[in-house]
Length: 110
Image (cartoon, rainbow, N blue to C red; front, side):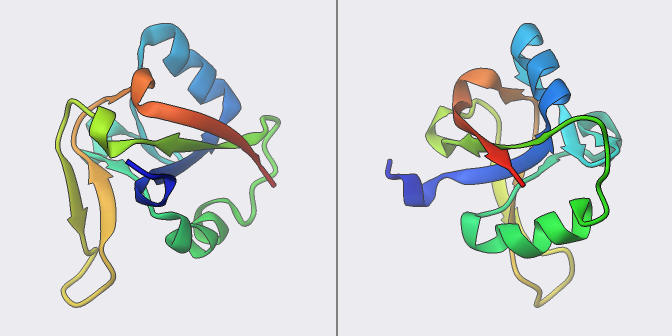
């Protein structure tokens, strides 16, 4: 699968490091877990800039942000493209823990 089909997820480096040690990543979005939200919010690269600005535009945390590059072919849980409201743009949502093996690259952000 080519890189153009990869999806992405922006997170704090410490959360990713914890996931690497555990084997799965279970943060849905900034400040919310997979268990709280029901899925992990992701985006395409084309959707990333406005999503990053919305979620992390005022971020001044002590931890640097990283972009997880995810290969959907390596997921062992459902991936669904869904709109937050009828007629809106669809975003990729991962319905279950993200296996660290599905993350094919980690890029610094910001």
